[in-house]
Length: 238
Image (cartoon, rainbow, N blue to C red; front, side):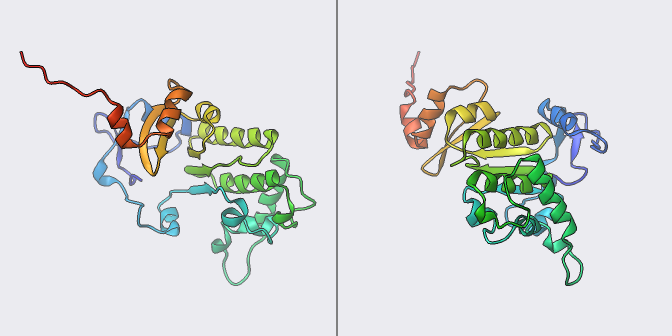
């Protein structure tokens, strides 16, 4: 994460993003008209989540295990909304008005099928549980959203709803990290695809120009085997 004032134009003039739309910022960065000083970058690796949030970095995570890591099955929708905001309360009492309003909004906008917002999430279907989880994470307006296998086990309609939500976040300027194995989905959703095999990065490709065959080869190849497939260079003396 770059500190305030770290960004500048190519001629060295400082950049102020105040009042600038996310799309405008994204266009400036992609066109390489905006640069930053590498010595003015925070290392977030060893910081706890609260400290990272205090620095202005809003991270959201949609884990593969919806009820094991994302939501608490025995708690209702409102209480699960509060998992991200309970630290903001003052005193010994928690303000439930905002979490209740957020739960209502997610139910209406994402068509969550539930008897009420006070129903334990474990009683909902897998698709509705995922809608609640994704809705909660997106509601925090993240700068970085990571979704790991977000449509596993869902029906086609629920899957496309999740895909549309992720695309909307991209359009609004969020960085979306999508973890998956379906090549058709990866090519349709992603701008760049990083492929890993046996814990090693085997390649980074442009999703607009790559093919399923190329990605599939990278998925089954280690870095060592990739080097072995490269033609050996011959030294020619003249």
